[in-house]
Image (cartoon, rainbow, N blue to C red; front, side, top):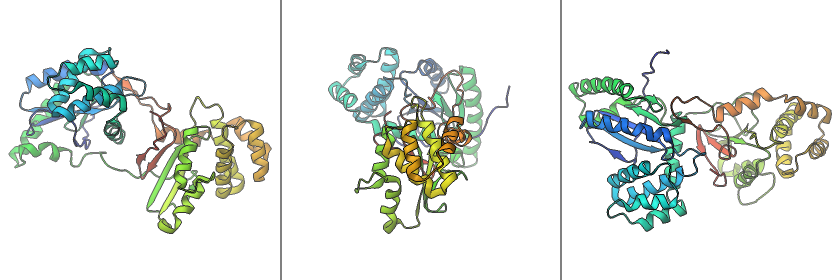
Length: 397
């Protein structure tokens, strides 16, 4: 068995729902999903911890609605609306009602759960669900999860230490006891009880923006040492990616948006911004990988300028990306079609493309829990700014 990971992550609580005293020695932050059966399985463990360590432990909820759970987002929004109406106490009551209802989590079930909470405006809860009212708030938790390399649910941090999956009570108890001892030592050293958690995680990993390095093979618009570097993980066959490109171009609406976007910003942001293209061809787009190889071969033949011309032509041609369409583009750009065709047929740039995919969304096994999907509709079209993610609104969850 591998040695236990005792590293600490900087998991900020923010405005998340909390249950337990502010001066608790141990803080358990849970990234969870109301539709996940493993998340429901862990709830009795937390109840046992709450009882055994009364006054010494608190729990923080973070939303991590998995994309393959179609009722995860609606339930998360319902619980957040309960929080907005009735504070943290209202949230936890809704939390309990939703898990009690699982797997029945359709609108009627959410409404029934809301009715069990005294004083809750059920109509407002259902309106919030239908309008996705708090989706942006939920997304903040999802973004934080990504920064902290949370790959599935349930995923717990005990005073910043990772406990993966629906582990048994004994596993949590061991970590809690160790953290209690450390907390008491901090208090004896003069740390105020309500500052123990802040003191414990302040030097932790993650929890902030980390610069994403520019690979030597990646096409770049602008200077690599620019103050702002935007990594665009995209797919030439994805219509949402094309729409995002236009959005990046600004109000002129030109079809060659990636180049236009930088040119339009030159007066205001001259030498301060760079755009890095990263390939993320989705599995259900049968021409995405060929297009990615096409663009990379254009770069090999014609340099960086050739790459961006090919990039613009590919998006302009979408959805027509069959060999005949690509051959026409190659002739227009003066490329050696035989070499381009060979690159596509042999997946010549597979290593580079796969490396971009690994950076965007690694697939990690998550014991006793659900792992996040590696691709799907929410993956392509993402933009990463100095390591943080900026998602165009058009990208679907």
